[in-house]
Length: 460
Ligand code: UD1
Ligand code: CA
Image (cartoon, rainbow, N blue to C red; front, side, top):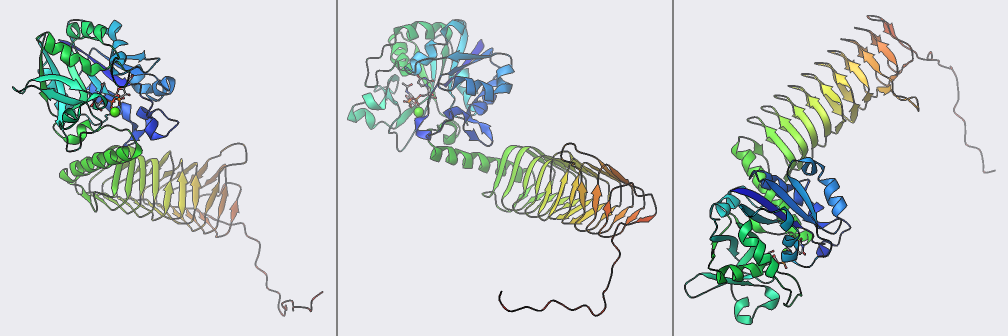
């Protein structure tokens, strides 16, 4: 049976107190809705219908990837008249001979395995409902069962009697049923209830009345069905997600000095025996070889780091490639487009942008290297600046293998320093420096014998 998945995402999320639609708030660096779409895609549905309302354009725009994925259909719900009304908007897209699965855009961590178990139970005579039991069920729809334990209906919290409110089994909102069954039930919904809404949950009693069996399954883990209604719940789910990432990494042979102080917002791949100290934040795609050490308070985004390299404390590395055995930091900033070849060293208070640092080269202290092609075994003295910007254009600096740049040098690009060249400290280099020679530009040092310091006069 083919599968259509409906993701309800038209909520305003007023409790987020935000200008951003709720489903665009981020969990692990990605919109809530993106998590649900990814899980849905894993079930290989025929189509995913995303019901949007409030901020619909923003929702579509921010899910650019999903939007272009085949089978994603955006369905507008202009007025938010309830979950049943939201699903009604999808009717023109649904086929009778398929399974329809309803998910929520604000329940981001629903698991594929749980959904597979739910879907496995669906047939022409069975509706599958995902329920769970909570100690504090207030606010949720309650599952009303008969004496034989069969599900009879769902009653919403606001419509429930005191006795029904005592029921602890709740509706997660996630259900699956055939299109053929769903269609006529949706047509029968009304809004004669406490909230004046068209409740999707009313189809349960209709199913029972028609002799359709209602079976329930529970999620593998309680957090799978936790929704996000406010920022406290969002933060709680973020911690759950991060804890799971941390555990998977530790299982794969990575040492985390503290799994509670570690965040991956994207994808982290790491070889064996890597060690991550506290407060490491990884965004985008981060790949570590084996035996890589990341010091405390390091931010990594879209980087590849080779075997045995270390990134020392308080460093920021973005869109860069760090070769095997490199040592970066502490307090280094590696900006996009940088490649450090094997064994290079970038020290404290050094910024490198869009440059290639050849193997074994050292930029150890207080320097700016931008738009530079640097050969092997180069030594850059403290305080060296590549002056790559003339106020309008960026220019390149080329430094040959084995060059030695004295401290406090400005290399005014475009400029080339030849192989094995030496630049005297304190130089401003505006023309190419030949290979193998000493080049310096420095005002001659003078001493004025007998010179006296000024003496402080009386007040004027
Ligand atoms: C719903 C269920 C309740 C269940 C609870 C689980 C109904 C009537 N009630 O209640 O049984 O325990 O979820 O969290 O279904 N939405 C739309 N369009 C609408 C209304 C809602 O897209 O017109 C979306 C919301 O964005 C949200 C989801 O549907 O993702 C649930 O809506 P919400 O208003 O939170 O439903 P609850 O009252 O919590
Ligand atoms: Ca809700």
